[in-house]
Length: 138
Length: 68
Image (cartoon, rainbow over all chains, first blue to last red; front, top):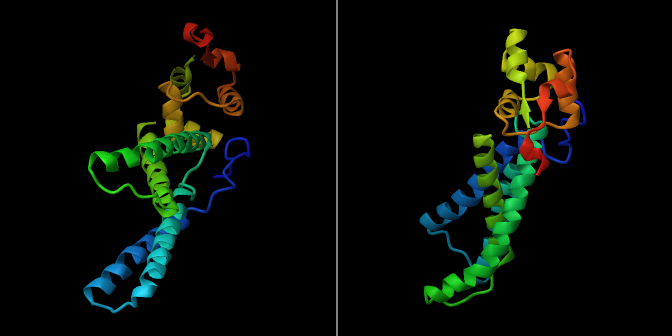
């Protein structure tokens, strides 16, 4: 259905089929490391961190494609829900950064520096979950 | 903000889906507007009024809470 620009202002998002591409990326990022582990595929110790970064990047890209692609039907209400989800994600991320070291302290685990990958994955997960919940209750 | 979309639809024997298709939004959006969970933009409000051949303020009315 053709929509006016005032109602469907979603040009910045990927087309709907990117959700499937994103799912494919997540599948690869989960299945390949699992296969490598079960098949006892030998990885040189120095290359472990490199592969870890690659798979985390693929996982983040998959989540990003799912989060940032259009639904089958987009209108001004879905845009408002997206804005709410982005706001909620921003707020929860701030709390996550502040309180995660405290949780480590309470559980008597070593307090570690949070990686950018961990934060980005948390933000993408929160956005996707909050968007779906908001859309369902709308 | 309350609205009379449901009444106007009933007068014209129109379903939520029919109205949604005419103004280019989803049926879920119409449902949310009718149940006052979502306040439409000016463009959408004008389009709805035009479909029912009436004025915007005859469909959408401010309530006392809106002035707080």
